[in-house]
Amino acid sequence: MTTKLVAATVMGAGLPLMACGGPADEVPGTEAPDTLGTHSAALSASVACTQGFSDVTCTATVSSGVPPYTYSWTYQQYVYATNRTYTTAVGAGGASQDFNCPGPDGTGTFLWNFRARATVTDATGASVTTAYSTYIPCS
Image (cartoon, rainbow, N blue to C red; front, top):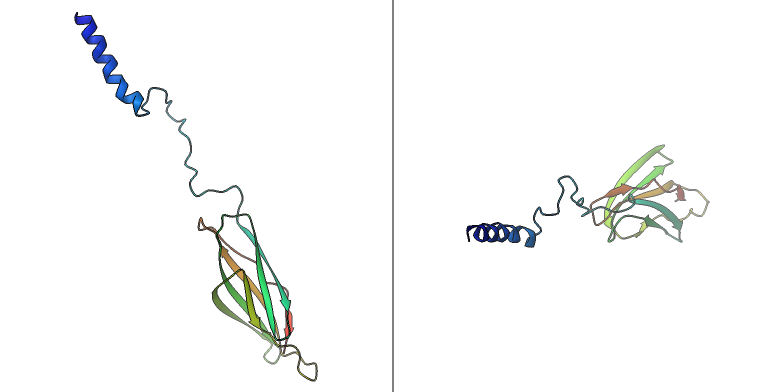
């Protein structure tokens, strides 16, 4: 009778561990890695700009990363009169951003050149800043 009591006590103590996913089948060091917030490829983006009648529209194209994405923009103007480049942070925007860039005046004179870049952040917090677009002449 004592043997049956001991067997029942040992068996009863092991059941809660196995029912809760306890150490019955686990081998230390073989736990599954935590994959929350990871993705298969690094965030990558590029910018292309096109000139309209009195503006430039720049569009950021994102490849890889985890949507949704947020965008912030920066642009540069190279001013011929001062022979200097001025950088301005626009701040938050969408995947496409419009900038003022009128065409040449009546004499065909360009007063400055314009280029832009975007910083893209994905849902995991990964962030990348694109290279500047090519310069576009403005007046």
